[in-house]
Every structure is written in structure tokens, then in C-alpha cells.
Image (cartoon, rainbow, N blue to C red):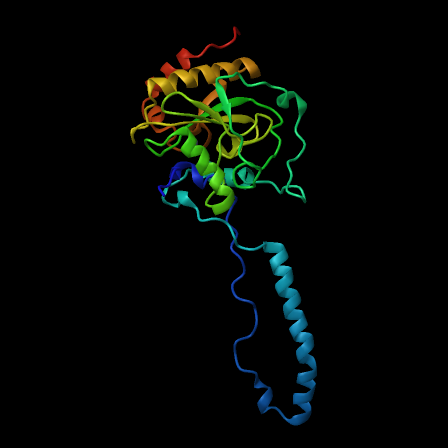
Length: 278
Ligand SMILES: [Zn+2]
């Protein structure tokens, strides 16, 4: 099964890896008890259970403080991230779900937004890896990404997000996927955060676009749908030109790669959008 997600996205939303304590803390050297005189040995033996209990308590306390070291492998390890991105890690990871794993309450104003019919809503199942259900309290911008996996469809990328609930490879998702033929799939409700834009997860809508090759340029079908989608979001949230940004503008990642390397192409895209009069 091919990897359907690029290395530029997968690791960035992973909370900082916590290195657990090494070893159990139990002494490995042979006990010197056998060489002691009888009385001293008995005193030492009576202390042994107390020592054991102290060690167990210390181990439990360490586990509570540090938690199990079960962070997923970081697929972005090969990518040199700027300092800003690593700062983002501290705030971009998931927040704890409710005790029953259910979604947190969502604000009504965002929940009431009705998507236009050309958007196919296929919401991910609630899970801490791609749809944590955390509320998105406000929308101050739209962040554009590329999927980073040439030739894959919007539906395949949505499936990748869904499988994260099982394989725990990364924390990743976006609100929308725009496909090679211009199809638009919504994966996460607008009232909830997605895991795509690090520090801006909490106040932006994330859109990932498919692309036919490694250059990362969107097809005209993809671009036309992206313009339609972003225009709708601009109108819905009363956004300005400065509020439509690239992942690069948030975290310095080369995403969407073609529109980072070709600023003219990015400006051309912005020029196609319809912004409200100032
Ligand atoms: Zn991105």
C-alpha cells in the first residue's frame, strides 16, 4: 500500500516526543547481603520490602509524570524544520478528549453553516489522530496545502486520514481535499479543528490540494474548484486577501511546493479570488 501522505505534513502536528525514563530503576548488581554477618543480614532483609515498595512508588510516579513513550514515528524527521515549526509543536498537538472520547461541545455559530451542494461531506470518524472533535472557536484564515503525494485522488487522501485512527502513523487531517478533477471532499466539520497547520490549527480552515506530479502544480480543474471553495469561505467568514495563506507562511514548510517556489503563481491564485470591498 503506497504512502498517501507527504513528509511535509505528517509530523508537524505530532506533540513533542517525550523520552521516558531509561530502565526500571531496579539495581542490577548482585546483592551484598550474603557476605554480611547474620544479624546485619536480618536487618537488611527486613528493610528489603520497604526498599522494594519505594522503588515501585518511584516507578509509578515517574510513569505518571512522563507518561508512556508512545509517540508515533516522526515522518518529518528528514526535513529540516525552522525554529518556528518546532515552537509550534508545543501547541499544535491534540488536547485530551473527554473521558468517553466524545467530541467537545461546539459553538453554534460555526455549526450552523451549511455547505454548498458541490461539496461532498464525508466526515472522518471521531478519533484522536485525525478528527479529535476539538471545537474551532473562530476562523481567521484559510491555509492552502498540497498533499505531497503525486497522482493520488482526494478520496485516497481522505482514506489515509481515516486509517490514521487505526495505524497511528501521524496526527494529520484537513477540512477539505480538492481532487485532480476538481472534486471537493469535506473531511472535518467547520466547527472542529483539523490537524494540518500547526499553530494555526485553532483558528483556520485547512485545504489540501491534489496534484498530478512532484512539481506540485495544481490542475486547472483543481485550481477552479479551489477558487470556488476559498471564495465561499471568504464570504462566509468575511476574510481579506491577507487571510488566505500558504502552509509555508505559517511554519516555513515548502508547502504547497509549487506555490512557494513560484510566487507569481501564488499571486495569480490570489488575484482570482473575490474579496469583499474594504
Ligand atoms: Zn502543508
